[in-house]
Length: 225
Image (tube, rainbow, N blue to C red; front, side, top):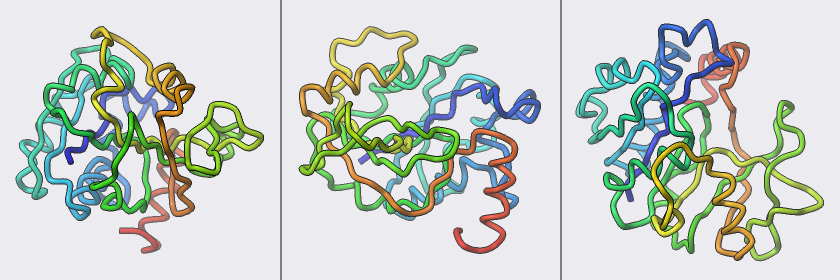
């Protein structure tokens, strides 16, 4: 299974840190955020990785190269100066991702999720990893029913972690260009074609300088490597 890291975002909430450095290259415990993710994926057996680029993307490409020094093979999907949103970025990268299901991980999260558990997962259109709602996103996104189908409406909703396995069929008929992922997911959820699971381990959305500092402290305490 191939993996894609979403790394094209502007990182507005991280400014001024992201004015001259792309968000994936910001450091936590002296290591770029995206390298933490690449190392985890490699350890989990994902050795073919696609990374989408936009804002200051050349810096990412120059820093990571072909991935050899990280023991992976990296290909890039360049979206130009303006990012295409999540679905648009995935659609553009589909020729690099192949015809089998693939893993997508947001480039601005940190987690100890066991990625290896997803490598042989059988899915319909998608499988989403959900987490407890963080303080900054109290209402959540989706629910889970008793058969692990993701539902749009539920008494208690969870937050989409930014980790998902997708079939290329989810994007069939989609035109290239800027496009959000949520409407595609909600439509497939209505058809009961998306499964999910709740993850109770470490997860952090690195959306602000304060949360980046929190992550740095977390790594330096040695509770995650």
